[in-house]
Image (cartoon, rainbow, N blue to C red; front, side, top):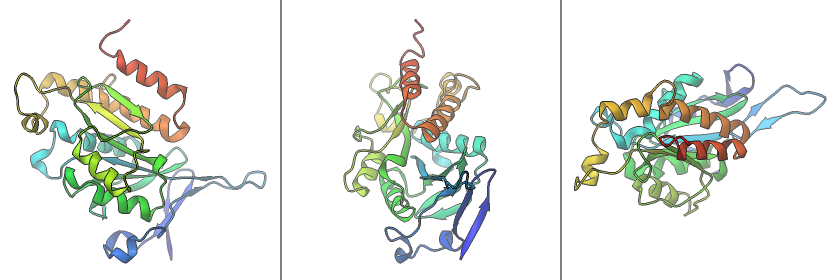
Length: 249
């Protein structure tokens, strides 16, 4: 039996019992396809392929607000802006189902710690039959200045343990879109782990959550553009603008 969730335009459906069972048999590949269907126009029914948008981070108050958890912060911002309630646990992840425009999306925050993120992403992608090209990973990136974003259609793990875990649970496939959020490099000889688990300074925090130029605000716009239009010239311009974000020419 299907349980219908009302959203502004499309109709999104899924089994009501899905989210309360962690039985592995219920998570087998091809178990369910989430889709949004619009009313027929001129005899043509429009159906959209869903997106699985995953923020990487560590669960618990201990890690809230740390550099390594900025992926979680982006998911929370998207959830707020798109009014997608995240109150369900499935495949060791906090999940919310909704839409961006007319496109169905699943927001997820893996709850099994960063190094085991793939244990959530793999089963969720399989269960909802989300293709690789529609799995968007959002995570921290030390090779980018703090607050600078980069949106790419694929890539390696770059020694990021969360991304590495996801790739391993997707049969080693690297064709996964990713939104990288710059957090900068550790100063001086500071230990990398200590840097990642440290909270942002006041100046750095403004670069992350500023109302206009903050990474979270700009990231939400970028995600909307990607979900609605794919990788196009607008994304190329977005990346170029981010490259010179602090060096206006």
